[in-house]
Amino acid sequence: MAFKVLISDPLSEEGLQVLKQHEAIQYELATDLTSDEILEKIRNVDALLVRSQTQVTRQLIEASENLKIIGRAGVGVDNIDLNAATERGIIVVNAPNGNTNSAAEHTMAMLMALSRKIPQAYYSLKHQQWDRKKYVGVELKNKTLGVIGLGRIGAEVAYRAKGQRMNIMAYDPFLTAEKAEHLGIGYGTVQEVLQEADFITVHTPLLKETKHLLNAEAFEQMKPGVQIINCARGGIIDEEALYQAILEGKVAGAALDVLEEEPFQDNKLLDLPQVFATPHLGASTVEAQENVAVDVCQDVIRFLTGDIVQNPVNLPSVPKEVLNKIEPYFNLAEKLGSFLIHLAQEVIEEVNIYYSGDLAGVETAPITRNTVKGLLTRHLGEHVNDVNALYLAEKRGIRIHENKTSTTKGFTNLLTVEVTTKSEKRSVAGTLLNGLGPRIVKVDHYSVDVTPKGHILIIHHRDIPGVIGKMGSLLAQFDINIATMQVDRADIGGDAVMMMTVDKHLEKRELEALKELTEIHQATAIDL
Image 1 (cartoon, one colour):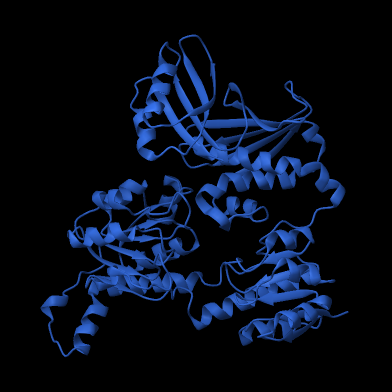
Image 2 (cartoon, rainbow, N blue to C red):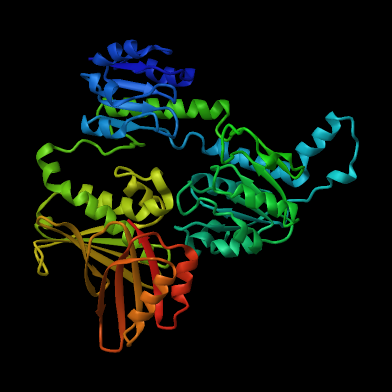
């Protein structure tokens, strides 16, 4: 039996060879199809291979009769309706690793060109100018490279920079001092990296928490003469703040492969002689395009021939009768993970998930995946999903354990998530209440009853008179309305926890004002 594969976007010859050499695969390369043509062709194929051109819509997916897998030769899957694919039991795979080397090499090229002012010097020669003194650069040897984000690409950049005999100081939310020592690099907080680095390169996803990570406040913390590289995502750097920092002489230069607006219309950064840019070329090598094509074709073959895929994007199909039982817990599990990651003050080393009561008798693996997804999403963004969450946790050295018990602790069902760091354990427990939906019922050893959605403010404080009044008055000054409030304590006059739902997101300055109250141990704003 031959599996039919439709390739609707251009694909490298190396990828086609992978398909051609497998006897169970029969493929058709048909690019530039009209909407009607692809709707007709999709009906009887087993697999669809695309890049970014083909829009894999719900209509297209529902028109298929035999489609089992969709492969994206690249990282992003914005052109694929993942919900529609999952509903139909169609797995989606991509190729997230194929451009790692290309992006790392481009970062190093930008770093070297920046340090020696190569683009500017070439530009001057093009304009018949010979001014060697104007373009004196600096050596990389013995300089400190700050790497913010030590994922696949960040780690490769650090490895290459060590070859230039640079000192590496890195920050990553999943990097511990022990891991850094094993890698032979320095380890610090974001602030410490900003303060110590001569060059700074960013390699994080673009998330709410990383948008404008390098802003005016960050530039103030840096060394005079620091130089900046961004080959990750436009928006991680506040371009207006960078512009001002260069004018003020704080930043000596910047090399940018990505911009906040692409393609740009008018960007005043590019008018500065200290700045040069490339048009988002991080993955633009022959080898990278070949790699993503080969990777996704191999995954399609694996799936069609009964093997396990390496880069799944969506949740694999679950028997309907099982899914009906466990699906109501997915949202609760993800919310508990998202809530808990805000409380942990250090890198997570271990996660224990306890299933009690009714939950002890169901298939819990998909619930565990959703829990871990919630834990990782704050720092990894859309890169983490239900399928790859456990893999990503393992790659970061996080141990995951499931525990089941018939003990109900007063609840028909109870899901408890506990994380262990180097110096502490934090936990949160939740349940589903009939007719009321998900609830957080315990934070560490404190009892609460909070719906896990919206803006939540959790305060760990001393149990003394007047604290609640001070909190309410301070929030009122910031025009923040309290919707609900609960307080629980361990002992009279000891430690207590206050949980509030509020009507809007708390800004950093507002949280800092809360922490200045002497009665407060910890103030955490959580948006669910």
